[in-house]
Length: 103
Image 1 (cartoon, helix red, strand yellow):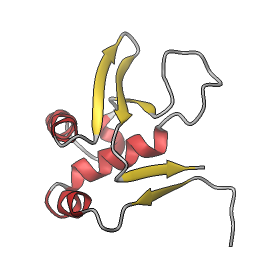
Image 2 (tube, rainbow, N blue to C red):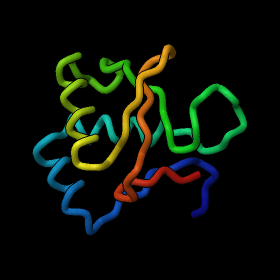
Image 3 (cartoon, rainbow, N blue to C red):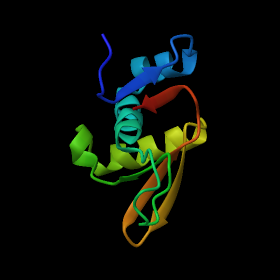
């Protein structure tokens, strides 16, 4: 069944994602949130590029501020995202192909 709804594709053979889900589920949740929010086109000129998402509302994925900070650092350290701060807030960019948001 083909649908016009966006979906996330996970690399089934990724031991990195499996370990993250098993040991750091909040990091996996943040990565999923970034994938869902990531910009797919450049239709809007607001400084957020394709593959980037505005993040910072840590309560949205059920975390405390400290867990959110730790998750951001962890995801950047393992090469899943890059992070940059702007006057609008924190912008994360997906840089790995372990998790892909498709439309």
